[in-house]
Amino acid sequence: MKNIPTFSICNLLGADQCVTEFLIMRIEEFLSAHRDIRFPHRHTFYQIVLFTGGGGTHSIDFQKFQVIPHQVYAMGPGQIHTWEFEPETEGYIINFNESFFTAFCHNPNFVQEFPLFNAVAGVPVNILEAECCGEVHALMEHMLKEFRAENDFKQDILRSMLLQLLVILSRQLPRPAQSVISRHQLTVLRNFERLIEQHFREKRLPRDYAEMLFITPNHLNALVNSVVGKPAGELIRDRVVLEAKRLLVNSDFNISQIADALHFEDNAYFTRFFKKYTGMSPEIFRQEYAKNAAVEIDFMA
Image 1 (cartoon, rainbow, N blue to C red):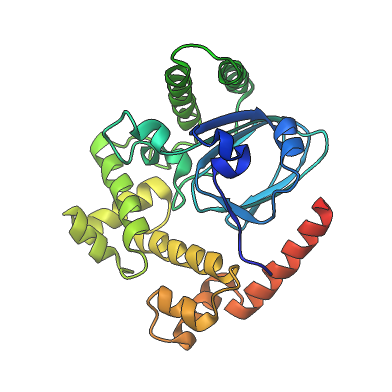
Image 2: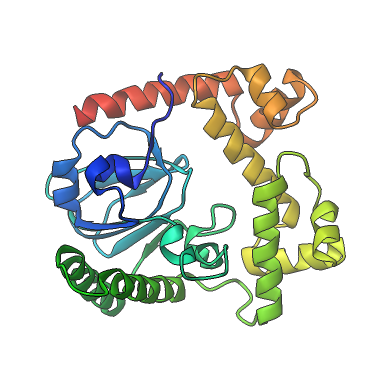
């Protein structure tokens, strides 16, 4: 299996149009224009997709989902993605770079503040209620018309509409198990998730993160459990397992290199860890993924 290709917005639009940091198209037009996209792949940008009709499947970081109307998914940079859409699949696809917002916003984590793109504890796929789906559909159609026009302040209008979309979709996410959560608690949780992303390779214990957050390990564990429904240690472990899977599907890395990259003591320890939490050895996971990827490529061909 070849390495997982990584696409930027420039790859999709061509070098002559790569000055843009935002792209919106109808799904059917996108699929027709980009028949050469290889699977599986990953992006350097954020992506939001709304399905209004059709069917098929798509997967995000090894989770497979059935395509149904009113479904929306949000994906961040680096996540591994593949799809098998039926010919009549309809909807909208939005791609944007983080710099689309940070160019005018002083908060470098602005986009990451939205739970839509949280690879650790977020919900990558959600089904919108009919009323909300209609609102999102209308907003995306408006964005598409603005994107195709040559109006003054076009980028500013698109940025404001994209921000509105992020808020609407974030409000539609399933509520946490504990409905009452303070702004401070939410900030602590978001900071914990951000720290996991930065340090999961070398820090595996909740107490390490609690220390960086200036709270006790018990406080951190109770907060994560009440909101996410799992202990803090499990979030850290899930991120390590996810990264191991991502590295395993890249044929440039052997098992020893992956174990070293994830700061495991040796191959044997990494193999035991991976098998304990996935039910298969790293070698079997790699073989099964390569086999399934080959089937998907044949299907798309």
